[in-house]
Image (tube, rainbow over the protein chains, first blue to last red):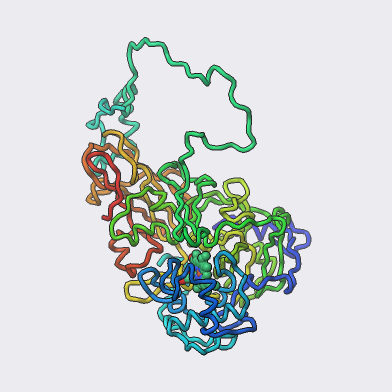
Length: 173
Length: 430
């Protein structure tokens, strides 16, 4: 169909070493130490979650100082996408609507607060995830979130998603 | 300007409201003998001295290294919306002013943006593209070595899943231009390396069914993308409209997954992490999932549906008298080439097929046009596109019925513009 499909055949003919038949093979070996943590993602089953942990009680204090200005004093007010809800401002609150709790930890750690991303420690990010889950009634106030407990949290909306890619590929829904 | 010499009886109408045969302009010209045509009259016997403008009496300006639009066009700008201006101005939306553009290529400086965390200042010398995870050979590439790879050039649209959001959720139609209403759509010629070449060099293992693409920006935006798509037609884009991809669009490199929602075309691409399953990143967990009418949601809704908008005339414009106009607009589909666009000038009672301006490219915008004689009466203009798969744009009410009232994503409903008797063009729901 596309020209691209023709490239491999042509490249095999003209490429002397034949090692990377489609291109000049200029990629350099990448060692594990060179890869920053945010180049991968914490998986729903917990793979990739680091050491550390925290509870909602601890998270509440961090939230007050570093998050409330944008997401609201108690997490429901906004103005930005309240993580606690749902409400009229945001129908898809992170701590209740998202299918996996691991995403909360990873996203907070890589992206929040938006004007100082990657400034939180792992403990702080776990505690904030715990606080948001607790405020949504998903976990208890004293439950510590860490690499073992976070993937075990059963998010209330998890079974309410249809995976359109699995169902019909790229055909628009 | 007067259109009084235009003779509508000489024309074939093909549908209600004054829609004309696609070829009728040429015929009208022939009938009119060329002397009077679409309101242009050549004055006979006028003998006044012609006005000689100043600029023909002086040397022109000196050459400049990078050309700019005419000063008089300074108001052709993106429409910027900062929804959290007070607390988080780096989250912003800028819409392409389609009502001020013609053709299909969006000027690079007017390409839409949706920044989740602002525009990073990436140093191209330090920037690396890493390919790792479930691969035989984890690799890194710098910009210089990527410049030596074979490159393809393709024209593709990008559309934010949130394009046309106001028409999706506002109870009353918002009176704004195409920049605000439908501006999160743009179309460029992209040049870069087929992603399959780079992934093959790293050797993705058979278990590597997904790749998490990560940007080199503050939030390190991440999306899981099926390996099939990356191997099939994805591009590592280094050039946009012939020049280096602009900072707003991912300098020095971005991912292009043609036909997929804009958010997946990760800008400032720095990492491709092959995995056995999607990571359920933040954007694919909440922001880019859609709540349905039954309370469940759909996730991994990648393909952009078939869609069209009439850009000329469009809301906020004013008609300049009755008579001849060319209706012109854009149509596109994430599923492939546009097959046809129909236009109605009587609120959907009758439809006529528009001319598709060649070339009609897959997953790119197509310009459509149709001659129209506006009789000065109130009317409703609509366009309805169909793609090669046979998919057709839904009406707004059919589209709304499928989703929770809060959903504003993937709105590809038919747009209606109302022309009032005074010639005002307004956004309406129909």
